[in-house]
Image (cartoon, rainbow, N blue to C red; front, side, top):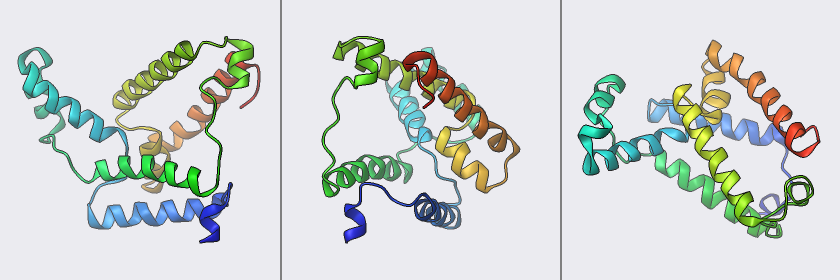
Amino acid sequence: MAVLRRKKWSPYTVGAAIGVLETVAMLTAKKPLGITTPFEQAAVMVAEKVAPEAMQVDDYKAQSGMEPSIGWEWGLVGGVVLGSLVSARLSNDPIPPAVPDAWREKIGASPGLRIGAAASGGALMMFGARMAKGCTSGHGISGTMQLAASSWLFNPIIFAAGAAVAKALLGRKS
């Protein structure tokens, strides 16, 4: 149990554990791990109830070849949220400020601006993930394990882009 209280874990141990989880998912569910698909499917189910013609739900279903549903992937979403909370509590990590010091120094002290920027960035990431047919975890973990060329190309690009944005916004390398 002491290992669960650590503030930092070995990246090799965590990487191996994620690899085992990915392997189990592929063997049992016949699908790779990914976080954006459940959000996409939930959005389609809402659109189907609210405005199916306006949202072209039937076109989406025909193109994707799947009927949207609430599946096991939501367990992964819940596990990420719950696991983060449990990890923070067990390791006694303090609650981070709404506005980190680096943001405050370069951008300003407004929590609303910080939260709005984070939400906008999340929305852009989700949009990009759907365009790319996979999110960072989908390409970075699942695609790499499947030896997908697109994922092997994606990984260094996303790391370089993240470093460039961090440097441009906050004046540091990461």
